Image (tube, one colour):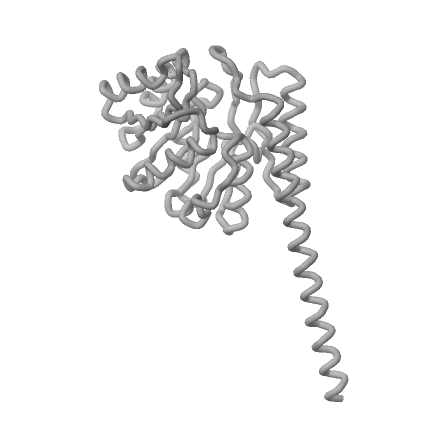
Length: 260
């Protein structure tokens, strides 16, 4: 992989941004650049990002007009990176939950895969400093996603990922409608449907120290609703395909009987 862009969405992450940028620059080679996608943070995150970009030629900033959802921020960052010809695009949180030292591990997987997922729930993966309720919520959400969509991915909701840029062309990013946290499931589901090669590698996920998580009840409910809807559509499509197959089989048998 000759070049990669780490996309870091931010909203009120001033306390975390300096540290995550410094760690990422130190842990990755010069071919890896960072793009901070800031949604007009009122705490001055965007201004700090501009100062970091002025100091480091590997740091870039994309300012958006307002808070429009995690998925929309990533799509804007992907578009920025694809327009500039990066070979790989990486999703990473700004709050330190994802360890920048793992970026090169994700990118290394793209030699043989189209999408590398940093997984908390495969052997060797874990989370640090989460309450039991949060653990159960994540585990349950991933179980529900696997059941609804019929996929064999242990951490479908995680947001630490690396994509081959060419592979994203098969996902039809312009059609992605989910802008909240279910964006992660949406993008993975589309990748699997497109036949992309997906691999999970274990990571350590650490709960943020500074700032407030953006996860709330409405986000959870939206994700459950959307995944459930996709699951129903999958089952309806499978039932339709089975019906068509049976009708074709019946037609063939009828023709064979008349011929005999």
